Length: 163
Image (cartoon, rainbow, N blue to C red; front, side, top):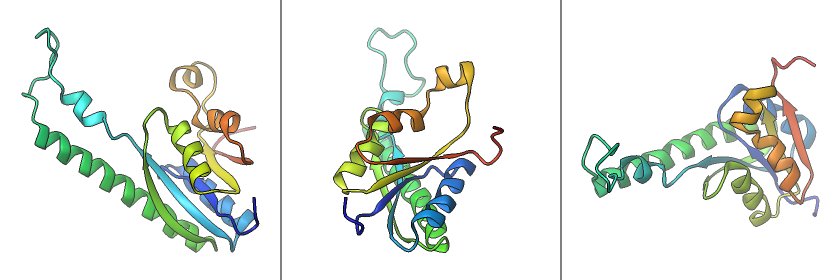
């Protein structure tokens, strides 16, 4: 990638993500950065979809307008989180802008796809430091990105993670 390609920073507002933004600034400033927040677009419809069998269905009747409103709210929330990350990145010396993308398959896939689409030269992502059973049950987005990305990936350890 060219030196003028942006760095993509995965950002969910967590302390691990905030540490990743600070580290991206230390490593890449004053380059361009895209601060990406991933959101799940189909979650509202899935959660409010009635069960055809009548067993275990939702408590409220399915309302398409309510589902659309929840989706708009989810997207606006993601945009606000990304904007917060972009502000933090600017304070770290990066020329940052916010980006909110839909998660179609998994957060890691969305991050890798966004990096490809934006022609990012690197991905910076925080790690919450999950280990053992928690890591197996909850998965590790940073590990999945590391294995799937075609560009370098900087994984920033959670500030509280011990060696």
